[in-house]
Amino acid sequence: MRTAVITLVHGRHAHLAAQQQALLRSSVLPDDYVIVAMDDPGIADAPAPGLAGTVVEVPGTGEQLPLARARNTGARTAIDRGAELLVFLDVDCLPGPGLLAGYVSAAGAAETKGRLLCGPVTYLDPPGPSGYDLERIEELDAPHPARPAPVPGTIIPDDSPDLFWSLSFAATNALWQYVGGFCEDYSGYGGEDTDYARRAQQRGVGLAWIGAARAYHQWHPTQDPPVQHVADIVRNANLFYQRWGSWPMGGWLEGFRRMGLIEGGTGAVPCELKQSAELA
Image 1 (cartoon, rainbow, N blue to C red):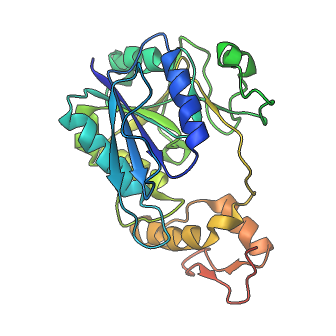
Image 2 (cartoon, rainbow, N blue to C red):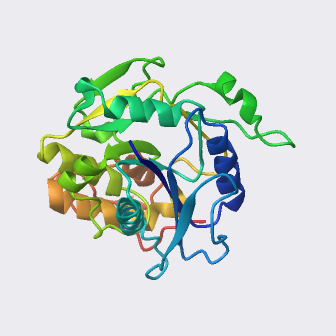
């Protein structure tokens, strides 16, 4: 099964370089590696030596990164180049040695037919001065507790679309075409991946958590809730409600309300950014 890894990039060049080194240590190398550069002219013309692939440029529209459009562009590019299995990997994610082999094996299993494949992700602590030791990355395995994390070699079918995340997932070419890709009405951070999983569910497509497909999220500074993305999240949350009649990212919206940054976003009341909100 010809496999393509698809990664979106805007900055984080050191994380991208580490991801490529981790891919080179995979038990199975990808047949193709599509890097989608979003308003990022600093990306080199090709992946690291030893990885076959290409770089595709997707211009932004204003201040918001076109995440949904970039994923669709990456998928379309990979399919045009012959991919049969699409593996989406966030630029912050280091693939475990068995991630690609796990996704490839699961893609051919009867129990995953008609399902999106999702892998457990460990959020790493800050690295030491020499970075993460890729030869021993599996020793840091501690998957995020909010998602299923079957042991390697096992698969857990799941029908909860709100658990889907775009950090690490895979879909066959046929399944990707059937679901139809991400909704490009979303722009910036938040909501577009949950929308994609809802669309998949609407078409009878569930999830399957693949124990062998483990990834490790490189540390970077962040905030909880992600205040730096509050305007994007408010805009995308309202779009999601218009499309599905429910509110996504409930924990973040509640956190913003407690901080006095937003109002609404419950019941049928639109979510609004307060004029007086200080986002620093």
